[in-house]
Image: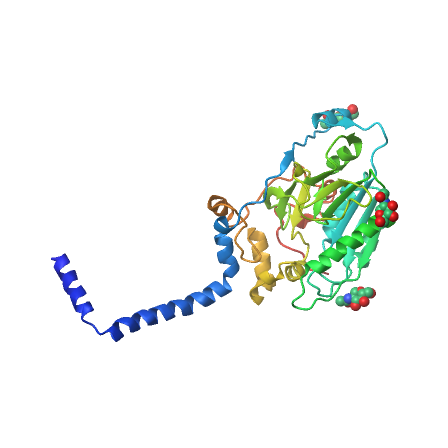
Length: 371
Ligand SMILES: *[C@@H]1O[C@H](CO)[C@@H](O)[C@H](O)[C@H]1NC(C)=O
Ligand SMILES: *[C@@H]1O[C@H](CO)[C@@H](O)[C@H](O)[C@H]1NC(C)=O
Ligand SMILES: *[C@@H]1O[C@H](CO)[C@@H](O)[C@H](O)[C@H]1NC(C)=O
C-alpha cells in the first residue's frame, strides 16, 4: 500500500513544470547559504577548532628528561639521579630574563621564589602591548614593591611601536627579544651562565634552578615543562606548558626566544598560571592586549560580571573550544576546568603569605575591588 502511494506521489511530482521544480530548490539553497555564510563567518574560529583533529597535527613530541626532587636529598645525589654530576666549580650564575606585561603579583612571587639562586633579574616592560596599544608602566609604577631586591632587579624599558591595523604584532615581540639580548649583555652575562627565558607568569621552581646551577652535564638548552593553571592555582589544567627555556649562555649563539627551540624538555619544573590576576580590570586589559585580541568577538565578553562568573566556574573567557589534536582529547578537554583542592607544592612565597595572595589559592575565586 505504502509503496503504491509513494509511487503515485513520485509520478505526480514528475509532472510538475521545470520552473516549479527548480525554484523551491534554488530558494532552499539560497536560504541555506544565507544562513551558513554568516554562521561560518562569525564562528570561523569555533568551527576550525572543532575540526582541528582533521586539519592540524600535533607538534613533534618533546624528549622529556625525568626530574627528581625530595627534601633533604643531597645535591650530589640529585645530580646523579638525573645522570649528571655535581659541579666542581662554584654554582653557576643565573640570569632570569622575563618579559613582563601586567602580572605584578606573580612577578613578586617569582622573584621571591628564585631570589636565593638568581644573580640578576632582567624584567622587560614596554609602554605598548604586542598589539601596539598604549600601556601604563605597571612595574615602574610599583617598583617600591621590589625594593627588597633593588640591587638584583633591572627594569628594562622598551619603547613600543604603535602598529597600523595591518601590521603584525610579532614585530613588537621580535624587537623586545632583541632588547632583551642587549639587556643580558649589559648586565654582564658571560659564557657558561644560566639564562631563564620566560614570561612573568611562567615560574620555575626554586629547587629546579638550584639543581641546574649545581650540576654539570645537562643539555645546554632545555624547555621547562610547567604545570598549567588558569585564573589561580585552584584550576589545574594540564602539564603541557612548554614555552619557557633555560640556556647555558654562549655569546653570539644564545638568543632570546619564547618558542620551540629544542626537543629536550625537563619534566615538572614549575608553574604557569595564566590570567592569574587580582582585579577584574586586569583581566579586561589582558583580554584586549593579548596576541589573540581578536578572540574578543563580542563587547559583552568584557562585562565584569560575566568575567567574574567565568573565573569561578573555571570556564573559558573567550568561549573558545580547547586546542586538541584528536576528537577524544577535544571532548575530554571541553567544559570547565575542574577545581583542585591541592595547595601542595606551590611557590613558597604564596604559601607564606596566604592573606596577601588569597585570590591565587583554592576556594577564593572572587576577585578584589581596587581601593
Ligand atoms: C632535613 O635535614 C635537617 C638537617 O639534617 C633536619 O633537621 C630536618 O628534620 C630534615 N627534614 C626532613 C623533612 O627530613
Ligand atoms: C613609548 O615610549 C617612547 C619613548 O619614550 C615614545 O616615543 C612613544 O611615543 C611611546 N609610545 C606610546 C604609545 O606612548
Ligand atoms: C661576537 O660577535 C661580535 C660582533 O660580530 C664580535 O666582535 C665578537 O668577537 C664575537 N664574540 C665571540 C665570543 O665570538
